[in-house]
Structure formats: C-alpha cells, structure tokens
Amino acid sequence: MKDKDGKPLSNTQRALRELRRMILSGELAAGTDHLESELAETLGMSRTPVREAALMLESRGLLEMRPRKGVRILPVSPEDMREIYDILTELESLAAQRAAEAGYGDADLAQLALSIAQMDQAVKDEDREAWADADDLFHQELVRLGGNKRIEAIVAVMSDQVRRARATTLFIRPLPVQSNEDHRAVYQAISSGRAEEAHERHRQHRLQAKGVLIGILEKHRLNSL
Image (cartoon, rainbow, N blue to C red; front, side, top):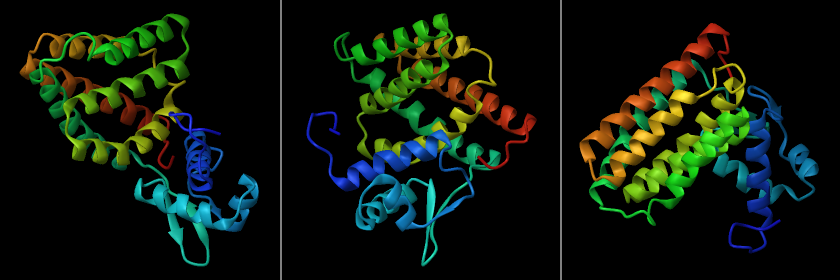
C-alpha cells in the first residue's frame, strides 16, 4: 500500500487509512466498543500503530480512546451536524472569497473544474458514490485555493464527520442536481474574481446542504450515526 506520492505507507498510516475507512463505511458502527488487540488482529499488525492511528482519529471526532477499554466509535447526532455545518459554512465561504480575490487562472482552477465535471457525470449515471467522491474533491480544493492553512486544518478535522453522515443518507436523499448547480456558480464567481458573490453563493450552498442532511436525519430518526 502506497501514499499519493507512491511511497510505501508506514504501519501507522496503514492503520489510520483502514480504521477511517471502516468507520466511514459503518463496518465499525457508531456506539460500538473495540479492544486495540482486536483491531490489531483485524488489520494484521501490532497494537502500537493501531493506538497511534486511533489517537489521530480521536482528534477528528470519530472515536474516543477509553483507558483499559479500547476505543468507542462516536455517534454523530443531528445537533452535532448543525454545529459542524455552522463552522464549515463560515470557513469555506471565506475560502471561496479569498480564492476569488487571488486572481487564479484556468490552470489554477483545473481541479475545481474537474470535480464539477465528475459530479455532472455522476448525476447523469446516478452514481451517488462517485458523486460523493467528486464533491469531496471540490470542497478540499476550494479550501486549498483559499490559501489559509489554519482553515484547511480545521475543515479537515470536521470533514470526516460530514462524510460519515452523508454516507448514511446518500441513498435516501434526492439526486444532488441543485448541489451541482451551486458548485458551478461558486466556480464561476471565483473564476471571474467576484469575491462577494463567491462568498454568498457558497454560504447559501452550505446552508441548503445542512438543511437537507439534518432534515433526513430527523425524518428517519437517525439520531446516532
């Protein structure tokens, strides 16, 4: 197993990637308890890299380390999502504004444009998982283009919790046609240097997404993901 640069992953990196995948997929369900020795056996490695990976995932709000009891996979409630979306809405909207102010050219915005094309194709194919991957790319690239490393760090901590909630609701929600149009409008505002519009369009997009997600969680009584 290698990282994005083609370098072999350390055992800690492998443990982090696999545990994160298992949590986001629901393989390690919310509210369940797991001994480090159990997880180490599942991953085929010693307890040390598993413990180090668990500490990283604890900082992202995905699990809780419990002395002598292993780890507990934390739930995500509708109220959690309200708080998380409030923060993401403000920080990502600021990133969109800063990106528009930066004067980027088409080459700089190529990944943002690619993510929109991938989302359009995914909606056409009704491939919701491909859409979710492209949506992740859009938001990651948007924050990177904002040029604020602290915003990147804060958003990264919270994004996995959003992904877990979204994965649970992905096949319940309508096809995200409007979301794609929102992304396109934000891209166009950034490309044209319209900073205030980029900020407001992204803010409205995040508020709409928040309403859809929390509405589904409450309607279907998904109170602990």
